[in-house]
Length: 213
Image 1 (cartoon, rainbow, N blue to C red):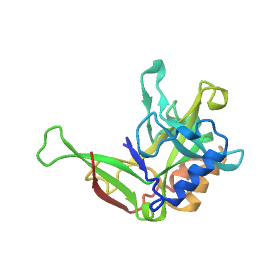
Image 2: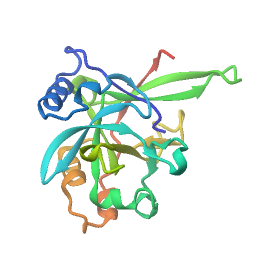
Image 3: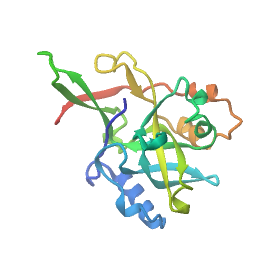
Image 4: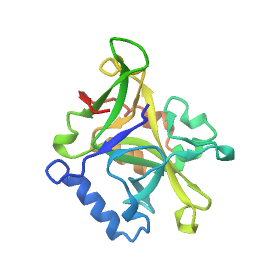
């Protein structure tokens, strides 16, 4: 968790996302035209919001931190220990980001049991109707980063599920629902204690509906 999310880029649903995508294309990012919308899978390119030199901007990044030896990617980091996990501890201090989403998916075993699972879509009360919600993330620069011919990769922070999410999964993404929390996550200097940032990790009320597999 979170292993899949979605970006609804229809004009009726998401004017904010369309503005983000336009800004990405106008930024000159060479990967801008390759970002995905709709259902987003690990390793795909997606728009991510970062603070670059104190200026908030949007960049195209791959979903996942590469594992050593080329053994796939790590797409999530447990927020409770991200500041002590070697793969993420520098990123938590210096490379925090926001991952814009229309919502995210989770799966739950069907009442009949077996291996079949039902798929559900989740979004916040301020989500699809107002355009987007934002997940707390971190990013890294690999093979020198995209400016040096490599790539930037992001991971999404997760937390223990609250009561509304627990019937579906024991984890959920960290959702930053208000402007002060989003600005603090992006702009706080490295010396701000991570514990102070985590105090803003209160999940909003979520809507849920069955989704197509």
